[in-house]
Length: 406
Image 1 (cartoon, rainbow, N blue to C red):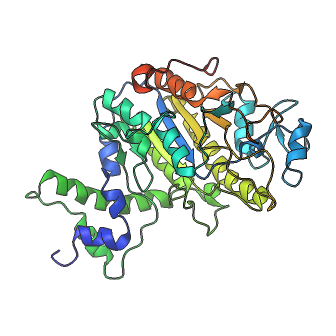
Image 2 (tube, rainbow, N blue to C red):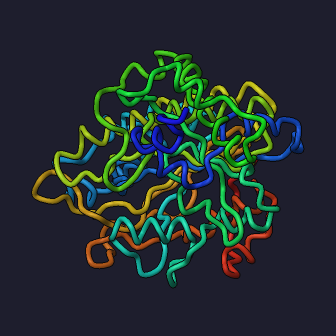
Image 3 (cartoon, rainbow, N blue to C red):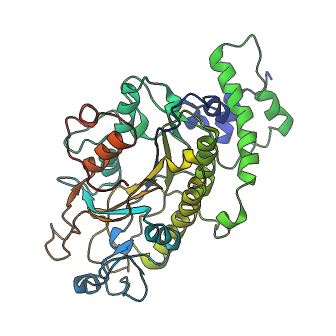
């Protein structure tokens, strides 16, 4: 192995960025099976990168101001999947609509924060650090991890780079390699196997790196087991854009999450993501395509989780860094906006509509005024899912959501 080193392989395969941030093998996570309270809840956080258009996701179809503001983009009452006489889900969200009908999907409307920032990067930084008032170097779940002992395996990302939300002051979550494995031309399968073979004389850090290499091929085998019904609408478009998101499809990420949960891993938080929501032009069909890539894997995952005790303790939270402007632009798209909706999904969730819907006519320079502070949602997840005291983690924040649990 003097010519093809692990570092050389990482550089050639483009995996060095992920490897630099606390990479663990799937086997490292599965090895924690049995180390947790079986009654403890698990949080699966789904980040939608790019700024998903909330008004065309949770559609206020009965409000005449909606159709007036975006006539080419608007859905009418016959097109949406109705939640009640005023709101409906985008027609691409059939699986989540079914979950809503079963009382397992909570739709939290008007979620945002004071003095919103319309930059993808600054707004996502605010959401992931939970500090709208000033820049912060730690993520809200990273601070939870600090307070929970700092074991990286408690908070796991199946994204190519550890998201800032899992970075604490003294610890950080774990990144598990995944996605499609493409060998550089000079690396054979036998050589990759050799890279994954540990040597008793190696220090622990190198041995863990070797385990991660071996894990790459095992994850490929697992991904081959993802049913075609979960991936039959996939296309050649990348799952991510310049504004973030994992490079492997959401169904692949959630398959890894499901495997860990069903094995009884000690992990309490999983982070997955989907990019591609920055739709400034020709939005309607493109957003439906993106929402299908969210809806099918997520509803299949929720159905799978409903069949086991551990799965019924899972809560999924879905958010994006901001919504879009109320009025469509000249390219039949929407530009960066502010408040939007969040979803909570799971057997323990009390389904329904939550939060005051923002007015479509009383606007802040053309944007929605938020009615629910996102820190209320985070505090509720910290307290009721992770069993933590929210205030020390959220800089003294004490707000909570009401009525979202059974």
